[in-house]
Amino acid sequence: MALGKNYDAQDCSLARALEVIGERWTLLVVRDAMYGVRRFGDFLAHLDIPRAVLSQRLATLVEAGVLDKRRYQDSPPRDEYVLTPVGHELWLPVVALAQWGERHLSGTGPRRVFHHLTCGSRIDGTARCAACGVQVSIEEVEVRPGPGLKGIRNDPVSVALRTPHRMLHPIP
Amino acid sequence: MALGKNYDAQDCSLARALEVIGERWTLLVVRDAMYGVRRFGDFLAHLDIPRAVLSQRLATLVEAGVLDKRRYQDSPPRDEYVLTPVGHELWLPVVALAQWGERHLSGTGPRRVFHHLTCGSRIDGTARCAACGVQVSIEEVEVRPGPGLKGIRNDPVSVALRTPHRMLHPIP
DNA sequence: CTACCATGGTTCAATGAACGAACTGAGGGG
DNA sequence: CCCCTCAGTTCGTTCATTGAACCATGGTAG
Image (cartoon, rainbow over all chains, first blue to last red; front, side, top):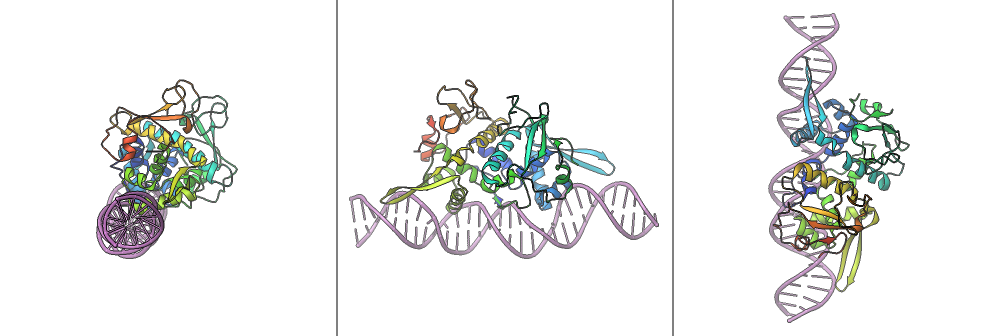
Protein backbone atom coordinates (compact mmCIF):
# COMPACT_ATOMS: atom_id res chain seq x y z
CA MET A 1 0.00 0.00 0.00
CA ALA A 2 0.99 3.52 -0.15
CA LEU A 3 0.52 5.68 2.86
CA GLY A 4 0.44 9.40 2.51
CA LYS A 5 2.70 10.91 5.03
CA ASN A 6 0.83 13.39 7.15
CA TYR A 7 -2.17 13.41 9.37
CA ASP A 8 -2.17 17.17 9.73
CA ALA A 9 -5.63 17.49 11.10
CA GLN A 10 -5.04 15.10 13.98
CA ASP A 11 -3.92 16.67 17.24
CA CYS A 12 -2.77 13.39 18.66
CA SER A 13 0.50 11.76 19.68
CA LEU A 14 -0.43 8.59 17.88
CA ALA A 15 -0.80 10.52 14.62
CA ARG A 16 2.62 12.11 15.17
CA ALA A 17 4.14 8.68 15.74
CA LEU A 18 2.47 7.32 12.62
CA GLU A 19 3.90 10.12 10.52
CA VAL A 20 7.32 8.71 11.34
CA ILE A 21 6.83 4.95 11.55
CA GLY A 22 3.47 4.55 9.82
CA GLU A 23 4.64 4.51 6.23
CA ARG A 24 4.77 1.28 4.36
CA TRP A 25 7.88 -0.78 5.21
CA THR A 26 9.12 1.59 7.89
CA LEU A 27 8.33 -0.50 10.93
CA LEU A 28 9.87 -3.55 9.29
CA VAL A 29 13.04 -1.56 8.71
CA VAL A 30 13.04 -0.70 12.42
CA ARG A 31 12.46 -4.33 13.34
CA ASP A 32 15.44 -5.34 11.20
CA ALA A 33 17.57 -2.67 12.82
CA MET A 34 16.57 -4.15 16.19
CA TYR A 35 17.77 -7.53 15.01
CA GLY A 36 21.10 -5.92 14.24
CA VAL A 37 20.83 -5.28 10.50
CA ARG A 38 22.93 -2.25 9.65
CA ARG A 39 23.89 -2.20 5.99
CA PHE A 40 21.81 -1.08 3.01
CA GLY A 41 22.33 -4.32 1.17
CA ASP A 42 21.23 -6.46 4.10
CA PHE A 43 18.01 -4.53 4.61
CA LEU A 44 17.42 -4.84 0.89
CA ALA A 45 17.94 -8.58 0.71
CA HIS A 46 15.95 -9.35 3.84
CA LEU A 47 12.97 -7.11 3.13
CA ASP A 48 12.51 -7.52 -0.63
CA ILE A 49 11.84 -3.84 -0.88
CA PRO A 50 12.54 -1.53 -3.84
CA ARG A 51 15.86 0.22 -3.41
CA ALA A 52 14.34 3.67 -3.86
CA VAL A 53 11.83 3.06 -1.11
CA LEU A 54 14.43 1.70 1.29
CA SER A 55 16.63 4.68 0.60
CA GLN A 56 13.80 7.09 1.31
CA ARG A 57 12.70 5.28 4.49
CA LEU A 58 16.20 5.18 5.92
CA ALA A 59 16.52 8.90 5.27
CA THR A 60 13.21 9.58 7.03
CA LEU A 61 14.23 7.52 10.04
CA VAL A 62 17.58 9.25 10.26
CA GLU A 63 15.90 12.63 10.08
CA ALA A 64 13.42 11.64 12.77
CA GLY A 65 16.26 10.58 15.04
CA VAL A 66 15.34 6.91 15.09
CA LEU A 67 18.44 5.79 13.19
CA ASP A 68 21.93 7.16 13.08
CA LYS A 69 23.91 6.95 9.85
CA ARG A 70 27.58 6.65 10.53
CA ARG A 71 30.77 5.80 8.72
CA TYR A 72 32.27 2.54 9.82
CA GLN A 73 35.13 2.33 7.34
CA ASP A 74 36.87 4.83 5.10
CA SER A 75 38.27 2.78 2.31
CA PRO A 76 36.05 2.12 0.59
CA PRO A 77 33.73 4.53 2.39
CA ARG A 78 30.86 2.63 3.95
CA ASP A 79 28.06 3.81 6.20
CA GLU A 80 25.88 1.84 8.55
CA TYR A 81 22.50 2.60 10.07
CA VAL A 82 22.22 2.06 13.80
CA LEU A 83 19.28 2.59 16.14
CA THR A 84 19.50 5.61 18.44
CA PRO A 85 18.15 5.55 22.01
CA VAL A 86 14.90 6.96 20.59
CA GLY A 87 14.83 3.98 18.26
CA HIS A 88 15.45 1.61 21.16
CA GLU A 89 12.25 2.86 22.76
CA LEU A 90 10.25 1.57 19.83
CA TRP A 91 10.96 -1.83 21.31
CA LEU A 92 7.78 -1.72 23.38
CA PRO A 93 5.36 -0.87 20.55
CA VAL A 94 7.09 -3.39 18.31
CA VAL A 95 6.80 -6.33 20.71
CA ALA A 96 3.24 -5.36 21.56
CA LEU A 97 2.23 -5.37 17.90
CA ALA A 98 4.15 -8.51 17.07
CA GLN A 99 2.51 -10.33 19.94
CA TRP A 100 -0.92 -9.19 18.81
CA GLY A 101 -0.20 -10.45 15.32
CA GLU A 102 1.07 -13.71 16.67
CA ARG A 103 -1.99 -14.25 18.83
CA HIS A 104 -4.64 -13.35 16.33
CA LEU A 105 -3.28 -13.67 12.84
CA SER A 106 -0.65 -16.37 12.69
CA GLY A 107 -1.95 -19.89 12.45
CA THR A 108 1.30 -21.56 13.27
CA GLY A 109 2.56 -20.38 16.64
CA PRO A 110 5.32 -17.85 17.27
CA ARG A 111 7.91 -17.41 14.56
CA ARG A 112 10.43 -15.82 16.83
CA VAL A 113 10.63 -15.81 20.58
CA PHE A 114 12.27 -13.18 22.74
CA HIS A 115 14.15 -14.20 25.83
CA HIS A 116 15.62 -12.31 28.75
CA LEU A 117 19.40 -12.57 28.45
CA THR A 118 20.11 -12.76 32.16
CA CYS A 119 17.54 -15.40 33.09
CA GLY A 120 16.54 -17.01 29.81
CA SER A 121 12.78 -16.72 30.33
CA ARG A 122 10.35 -15.48 27.72
CA ILE A 123 9.38 -11.87 27.32
CA ASP A 124 5.72 -10.97 26.93
CA GLY A 125 3.85 -8.35 24.92
CA THR A 126 4.51 -5.65 27.50
CA ALA A 127 8.26 -6.33 27.28
CA ARG A 128 8.30 -7.84 30.75
CA CYS A 129 10.21 -10.95 31.69
CA ALA A 130 7.80 -13.65 32.78
CA ALA A 131 10.15 -14.91 35.46
CA CYS A 132 11.80 -11.76 36.79
CA GLY A 133 8.68 -9.61 36.48
CA VAL A 134 10.73 -6.61 35.37
CA GLN A 135 10.54 -4.44 32.30
CA VAL A 136 13.27 -5.58 29.92
CA SER A 137 14.91 -3.14 27.55
CA ILE A 138 15.99 -4.29 24.11
CA GLU A 139 19.66 -4.42 25.07
CA GLU A 140 18.94 -7.35 27.39
CA VAL A 141 17.08 -9.48 24.89
CA GLU A 142 17.90 -12.44 22.69
CA VAL A 143 15.80 -13.58 19.72
CA ARG A 144 15.40 -17.26 19.09
CA PRO A 145 13.62 -19.02 16.26
CA GLY A 146 10.15 -20.20 17.29
CA PRO A 147 8.11 -23.24 16.27
CA GLY A 148 6.07 -21.29 13.69
CA LEU A 149 9.11 -20.22 11.68
CA LYS A 150 9.17 -21.51 8.15
CA GLY A 151 12.79 -20.77 7.33
CA ILE A 152 12.33 -20.40 3.61
CA ARG A 153 14.48 -17.35 3.08
CA ASN A 154 18.18 -17.63 2.46
CA ASP A 155 19.44 -14.09 2.70
CA PRO A 156 22.25 -13.51 5.25
CA VAL A 157 19.90 -12.03 7.83
CA SER A 158 17.43 -14.91 7.75
CA VAL A 159 20.29 -17.35 8.00
CA ALA A 160 21.82 -15.58 10.98
CA LEU A 161 18.47 -15.57 12.77
CA ARG A 162 18.10 -19.32 12.51
CA THR A 163 20.21 -19.50 15.64
CA PRO A 164 19.73 -17.40 18.79
CA HIS A 165 20.98 -13.87 18.37
CA ARG A 166 21.37 -10.97 20.74
CA MET A 167 19.23 -7.99 19.78
CA LEU A 168 21.08 -4.98 18.33
CA HIS A 169 24.28 -6.96 17.83
CA PRO A 170 25.49 -6.68 14.23
CA ILE A 171 24.19 -9.08 11.59
CA PRO A 172 25.62 -10.99 9.94
CA MET B 1 0.50 8.00 2.13
CA ALA B 2 -0.45 4.82 0.55
CA LEU B 3 0.74 1.55 1.94
CA GLY B 4 0.63 -1.49 -0.22
CA LYS B 5 -1.14 -4.18 1.64
CA ASN B 6 1.00 -7.25 1.78
CA TYR B 7 4.39 -8.15 3.01
CA ASP B 8 4.26 -11.59 1.50
CA ALA B 9 7.92 -12.35 1.77
CA GLN B 10 8.11 -11.68 5.48
CA ASP B 11 7.63 -14.67 7.73
CA CYS B 12 6.99 -12.55 10.79
CA SER B 13 4.11 -11.80 13.14
CA LEU B 14 4.80 -8.11 12.92
CA ALA B 15 4.35 -8.22 9.16
CA ARG B 16 1.05 -10.09 9.59
CA ALA B 17 -0.13 -7.43 12.05
CA LEU B 18 0.90 -4.64 9.70
CA GLU B 19 -1.10 -6.16 6.88
CA VAL B 20 -4.18 -5.52 9.00
CA ILE B 21 -3.45 -2.31 10.88
CA GLY B 22 -0.52 -0.94 8.89
CA GLU B 23 -2.42 0.74 6.10
CA ARG B 24 -2.77 4.46 6.08
CA TRP B 25 -5.51 5.68 8.47
CA THR B 26 -6.27 2.25 9.88
CA LEU B 27 -4.74 2.68 13.30
CA LEU B 28 -6.41 6.05 13.70
CA VAL B 29 -9.73 4.42 12.94
CA VAL B 30 -8.99 1.88 15.67
CA ARG B 31 -8.02 4.64 18.08
CA ASP B 32 -11.32 6.41 17.39
CA ALA B 33 -13.21 3.17 17.95
CA MET B 34 -11.43 2.91 21.30
CA TYR B 35 -12.65 6.37 22.18
CA GLY B 36 -16.16 5.15 21.47
CA VAL B 37 -16.73 6.40 17.93
CA ARG B 38 -19.14 4.04 16.20
CA ARG B 39 -20.85 5.72 13.28
CA PHE B 40 -19.53 6.26 9.77
CA GLY B 41 -20.23 9.96 9.87
CA ASP B 42 -18.41 10.49 13.15
CA PHE B 43 -15.27 8.73 11.96
CA LEU B 44 -15.48 10.81 8.82
CA ALA B 45 -15.80 14.14 10.56
CA HIS B 46 -13.15 13.41 13.17
CA LEU B 47 -10.53 11.98 10.85
CA ASP B 48 -10.87 14.17 7.74
CA ILE B 49 -10.49 11.10 5.61
CA PRO B 50 -11.91 10.45 2.13
CA ARG B 51 -15.18 8.55 2.37
CA ALA B 52 -14.03 5.81 0.01
CA VAL B 53 -10.92 5.16 2.09
CA LEU B 54 -12.86 5.06 5.34
CA SER B 55 -15.33 2.67 3.82
CA GLN B 56 -12.58 0.36 2.66
CA ARG B 57 -10.73 0.48 5.99
CA LEU B 58 -13.82 -0.31 8.01
CA ALA B 59 -14.49 -3.28 5.73
CA THR B 60 -10.92 -4.54 6.18
CA LEU B 61 -11.14 -4.23 9.96
CA VAL B 62 -14.47 -6.04 10.04
CA GLU B 63 -13.07 -8.80 7.91
CA ALA B 64 -10.00 -9.10 10.13
CA GLY B 65 -12.23 -9.43 13.18
CA VAL B 66 -11.09 -6.19 14.78
CA LEU B 67 -14.45 -4.45 14.38
CA ASP B 68 -17.97 -5.79 14.40
CA LYS B 69 -20.59 -4.14 12.18
CA ARG B 70 -24.03 -4.41 13.68
CA ARG B 71 -27.47 -2.95 13.22
CA TYR B 72 -28.49 -0.73 16.07
CA GLN B 73 -31.79 0.55 14.72
CA ASP B 74 -34.14 -0.60 11.99
CA SER B 75 -35.97 2.46 10.89
CA PRO B 76 -34.13 3.97 9.26
CA PRO B 77 -31.65 1.08 9.15
CA ARG B 78 -28.39 2.11 10.77
CA ASP B 79 -25.23 0.15 11.48
CA GLU B 80 -22.47 0.83 13.95
CA TYR B 81 -18.89 -0.37 14.13
CA VAL B 82 -17.80 -1.70 17.51
CA LEU B 83 -14.46 -3.13 18.61
CA THR B 84 -14.36 -6.89 19.16
CA PRO B 85 -12.25 -8.48 21.93
CA VAL B 86 -9.49 -8.85 19.33
CA GLY B 87 -9.75 -5.11 18.78
CA HIS B 88 -9.58 -4.46 22.52
CA GLU B 89 -6.20 -6.15 22.59
CA LEU B 90 -4.81 -3.52 20.28
CA TRP B 91 -4.98 -1.28 23.33
CA LEU B 92 -1.44 -2.18 24.35
CA PRO B 93 0.25 -1.44 21.00
CA VAL B 94 -1.78 1.74 20.67
CA VAL B 95 -0.80 3.18 24.07
CA ALA B 96 2.78 2.13 23.55
CA LEU B 97 2.99 3.93 20.22
CA ALA B 98 1.11 6.98 21.44
CA GLN B 99 3.42 7.30 24.40
CA TRP B 100 6.47 7.03 22.15
CA GLY B 101 5.07 9.78 19.95
CA GLU B 102 4.31 11.92 22.94
CA ARG B 103 7.80 11.50 24.38
CA HIS B 104 9.79 12.08 21.24
CA LEU B 105 7.72 13.95 18.71
CA SER B 106 5.27 16.24 20.43
CA GLY B 107 6.67 19.52 21.60
CA THR B 108 3.82 20.41 23.85
CA GLY B 109 3.24 17.70 26.42
CA PRO B 110 0.54 15.05 26.36
CA ARG B 111 -2.61 15.81 24.40
CA ARG B 112 -4.66 13.17 26.11
CA VAL B 113 -4.04 11.36 29.34
CA PHE B 114 -5.30 7.91 30.27
CA HIS B 115 -6.41 7.21 33.81
CA HIS B 116 -7.32 4.08 35.69
CA LEU B 117 -11.05 4.24 36.38
CA THR B 118 -10.92 2.61 39.76
CA CYS B 119 -8.07 4.60 41.27
CA GLY B 120 -7.72 7.65 39.05
CA SER B 121 -3.94 7.34 38.51
CA ARG B 122 -2.21 7.63 35.20
CA ILE B 123 -1.58 4.72 32.90
CA ASP B 124 1.85 4.32 31.34
CA GLY B 125 3.08 3.10 27.98
CA THR B 126 2.85 -0.53 29.00
CA ALA B 127 -0.82 -0.05 29.98
CA ARG B 128 0.00 -0.37 33.65
CA CYS B 129 -1.48 1.78 36.36
CA ALA B 130 1.25 3.77 38.06
CA ALA B 131 -0.39 3.45 41.46
CA CYS B 132 -1.88 -0.04 41.44
CA GLY B 133 0.96 -1.58 39.45
CA VAL B 134 -1.44 -3.80 37.52
CA GLN B 135 -2.04 -4.22 33.82
CA VAL B 136 -5.16 -2.24 32.94
CA SER B 137 -7.42 -3.34 30.12
CA ILE B 138 -9.13 -0.74 27.98
CA GLU B 139 -12.51 -1.28 29.65
CA GLU B 140 -11.15 0.20 32.87
CA VAL B 141 -9.73 3.36 31.37
CA GLU B 142 -10.85 6.97 31.11
CA VAL B 143 -9.38 9.51 28.66
CA ARG B 144 -8.93 13.06 29.82
CA PRO B 145 -7.70 16.05 27.86
CA GLY B 146 -4.02 16.78 28.54
CA PRO B 147 -2.07 20.05 28.69
CA GLY B 148 -0.77 19.73 25.14
CA LEU B 149 -4.22 19.56 23.57
CA LYS B 150 -4.96 22.37 21.18
CA GLY B 151 -8.70 21.94 20.91
CA ILE B 152 -9.06 23.44 17.47
CA ARG B 153 -11.45 20.89 16.04
CA ASN B 154 -15.18 21.22 16.45
CA ASP B 155 -16.54 17.93 15.23
CA PRO B 156 -18.77 16.05 17.71
CA VAL B 157 -16.01 13.64 18.70
CA SER B 158 -13.45 16.34 19.47
CA VAL B 159 -16.06 18.21 21.48
CA ALA B 160 -17.02 15.15 23.51
CA LEU B 161 -13.36 14.44 24.30
CA ARG B 162 -12.84 17.89 25.79
CA THR B 163 -14.20 16.41 28.99
CA PRO B 164 -13.18 13.09 30.55
CA HIS B 165 -14.69 10.13 28.78
CA ARG B 166 -14.73 6.44 29.47
CA MET B 167 -13.03 4.38 26.77
CA LEU B 168 -15.30 2.35 24.50
CA HIS B 169 -18.42 4.16 25.70
CA PRO B 170 -20.39 5.58 22.78
CA ILE B 171 -19.56 9.01 21.41
CA PRO B 172 -21.18 11.37 21.26
C1' DC C 1 46.85 0.60 -16.93
C1' DT C 2 42.61 -1.76 -17.82
C1' DA C 3 38.80 -4.62 -16.77
C1' DC C 4 35.82 -6.20 -13.58
C1' DC C 5 33.36 -6.51 -9.15
C1' DA C 6 30.94 -4.95 -4.79
C1' DT C 7 28.37 -1.57 -2.43
C1' DG C 8 25.08 1.97 -2.21
C1' DG C 9 22.65 4.54 -4.25
C1' DT C 10 19.50 7.52 -8.20
C1' DT C 11 16.40 7.68 -12.34
C1' DC C 12 12.47 6.51 -14.85
C1' DA C 13 8.14 4.48 -16.81
C1' DA C 14 4.21 1.85 -15.28
C1' DT C 15 1.01 0.55 -11.82
C1' DG C 16 -1.82 1.18 -8.05
C1' DA C 17 -3.60 3.80 -3.98
C1' DA C 18 -5.39 8.06 -1.94
C1' DC C 19 -7.88 12.27 -2.54
C1' DG C 20 -11.97 15.01 -2.91
C1' DA C 21 -15.96 16.32 -5.26
C1' DA C 22 -20.11 14.67 -7.16
C1' DC C 23 -23.55 11.33 -7.28
C1' DT C 24 -26.78 7.43 -5.47
C1' DG C 25 -30.18 5.32 -2.62
C1' DA C 26 -32.86 4.28 1.36
C1' DG C 27 -35.68 6.29 4.51
C1' DG C 28 -37.82 9.74 7.34
C1' DG C 29 -40.40 14.61 8.23
C1' DG C 30 -42.95 18.61 7.08
C1' DC D 1 -44.18 16.43 -2.95
C1' DC D 2 -39.96 18.42 -1.52
C1' DC D 3 -36.19 18.41 1.28
C1' DC D 4 -33.00 16.49 4.60
C1' DT D 5 -29.85 12.87 6.76
C1' DC D 6 -26.93 9.06 6.73
C1' DA D 7 -23.99 5.84 4.47
C1' DG D 8 -22.02 4.81 1.15
C1' DT D 9 -20.20 4.38 -4.37
C1' DT D 10 -18.14 6.44 -8.60
C1' DC D 11 -14.79 8.88 -10.96
C1' DG D 12 -10.94 11.87 -12.59
C1' DT D 13 -6.61 13.73 -10.67
C1' DT D 14 -2.61 13.41 -7.95
C1' DC D 15 0.79 11.01 -5.54
C1' DA D 16 3.45 6.74 -3.82
C1' DT D 17 5.26 2.26 -4.75
C1' DT D 18 7.44 -1.01 -7.93
C1' DG D 19 11.14 -3.00 -10.37
C1' DA D 20 14.40 -2.62 -13.87
C1' DA D 21 18.12 -0.02 -15.55
C1' DC D 22 21.64 3.06 -14.78
C1' DC D 23 25.53 5.56 -12.17
C1' DA D 24 29.48 6.49 -8.99
C1' DT D 25 33.09 5.21 -5.87
C1' DG D 26 36.64 2.50 -4.73
C1' DG D 27 38.90 -1.81 -4.54
C1' DT D 28 41.22 -5.99 -6.84
C1' DA D 29 43.19 -9.13 -10.43
C1' DG D 30 45.74 -9.54 -14.53
